Image 1 (cartoon, rainbow, N blue to C red):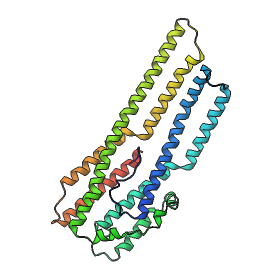
Image 2 (image 1 turned 45 degrees about the vertical axis):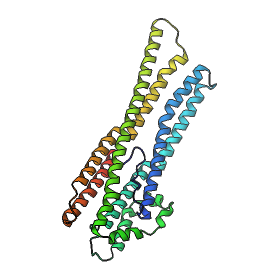
Image 3 (image 1 turned 30 degrees about the vertical axis):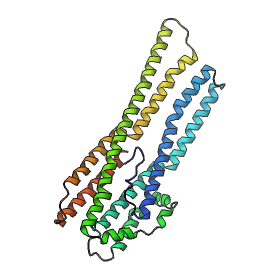
Length: 306
């Protein structure tokens, strides 16, 4: 889950407040992280564009003043981004949210450590939720600013689903867990593939423009023509824009996430076709365990990839 906003499918509204708060915190921190990255990447091409504007006489500013201003702004934004640690907080909150989601579905589907007949499953669930966030101070700080954490951990709808018949729980799992997750991963894979094509096309256009500008400038100088500050500024400006586009592509990891999300969507779709009958409870619970393991593995792979 990452490039684009990394959040879960919105098809199930019975999650505990702690998950809702962790999910909202992860989304907010991800946006702040990428906003900071975007500002950092834009500063260099912006400085190059200002140099061109000065050369064309559009902006009346000395180069020394521009250099001092752009350098100061770059250092300031870099310090804010690093000091805020938005990326680390985003990762921690997203990991906590995914852990809380998995714990919730294990409770609903009566999987270990909440098997049928277990004494005080609600109390065990609350302890598991607390343990999922206990060792993450960044998560606790982010959650402390959200009212959702005050909601009861075990919602009435969760209790109802856990007490429901095996067939009803199976249908809820299919409709509110497996299918939405498969659809979410498929949609993200398609979206990232399209974004990768668009950003790659933009990068190629900028690089081609830089090469053409460099050739024209070289031909003019070789022919004995006098250069100009404006003409000299086009190549570094386009190069800076190209570097910014490459940096943005690297930070979003569109191509890598497309392959990862596409593979996960195909696995999840395959699970629906291989779902065992409810008449074989052991086989069915093993199937649910495999689905949950696949989702956990995908998220772990996302953490290493981003």
